[in-house]
Amino acid sequence: MSYKPLDPSIVYLITGAAGFIGYFLSKKLLKSGCQVIGIDNLNDYYDVNLKMDRLEQLLPFNKFTFIRGDISDKELITELFEKYKPSVVVNLAAQAGVRYSIENPDVYIQSNIIGFYNILEACRHNPVEHLVYASSSSVYGTNKKVPFEETDFVDTPVSLYASTKKSNELMAHTYSHLYNIPATGLRFFTVYGPMGRPDMAYFGFTDKYFAEEPIKIFNNGDFDNDLYRDFTYIDDIVEGIERLIGKPPVDAVPHKVFNIGNNNPEKLMTFINTLEKTLTKALGREVQFEKVFEPIKPGDVPATYASTDLLQEAVGFKPKTSIEEGLQKFANWYVDYYNKK
Image (cartoon, rainbow, N blue to C red; front, side, top):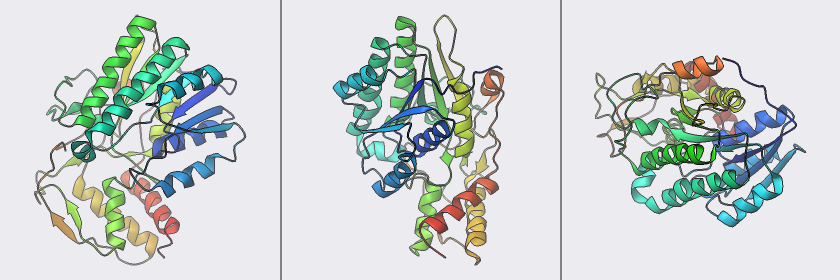
C-alpha cells in the first residue's frame, strides 16, 4: 500500500495538458513544486477557448513549459524526450468520445494508436521511471458481470474508441515485456467536474437548458432498466493518478492496469435529477430540463461499474466524492464561468 510522494527534482511530461484531466493533474504537480512539460495540439473537437483558459492558469507557474504539438508527430516527440529527459510520463492525449469515433475513425487511429506508439518508442529509447497512460472503462464493452474487475474478459469492445484503448493496454504490455518499461494503464470511469469536457452529457444537458432546448436521454424512457454510470469526480481521478505515479510496477513484466471509478454507479436519471437540483441552488431559481427519450446509441453500453479493490490495495485510495458534492461544484463553476446569473 506504500507509494512515493511526488518528487520535485524530476521532470514530468503530461500529454494532453490542456485537456480536462491533463489540466488538473498538471496544476496539482505544479502546486507541489514539480517541473512539468505539457504538450497539447489544442484541437477543436470541443471549444478551444476552454482549453486556452485551462492553459492560461498553468502558464504563470515558472516550472511549466508548454509545447503546442501532436503526439502523432514522431519527430517532435523524439526531440521532446531527448531535450527534456522526463522521468515520469503521463499520456492523457487522446481523441475522446465514443459516438464521435463512429463518424471520424481516422483521428482515433492517428492519436490513440500512432500517437501512443510514438510515446512508447520514446520511452524505449529514453528510459523513464514510469509511464502512466489513460485507458477507459469502455474496454469492458457490454460486460454483464458487475462490478467490472481488471481481470475481466475485455476482448469485445463495441466502439472504435474502446478498441483503441484496449490496443493501448496490449501495446504497453508488449513494450513493458520487451524493454522493461514500468507502465500503468488507468481505466477511467465517466470523469466529471468544473472545467470539464463540453461533449460529456452533464455539460451538454446544462448547455441545452440555457439554450432553452430539450435534452436527449438515450435510455428509451425505460426507468426500470435505466443506464447506470460510475461517475467519478475529477479530484478523485487526480489523486488516484498522483498516488499511482509513485508506485511503478515491479513485476517480471512491469505493467499493470487499474480501474479509477467511484465504485458507486448511479442511474442516469438520478444523475440528471441531481444536476437539476444543483443548478437550482447555483441559480437561486428552479431548474427543470425538458426531456426527450430516445433509443440507446450504437457504441454506448448499458452500465459502467468499477471495482476499485486493486487500486485500494495498491495505494490505499478509493474515490469518495458524491455526485451531489461534485455536481454542485460543476454547477457553481458553470454559472460563474458563463455568467448565467
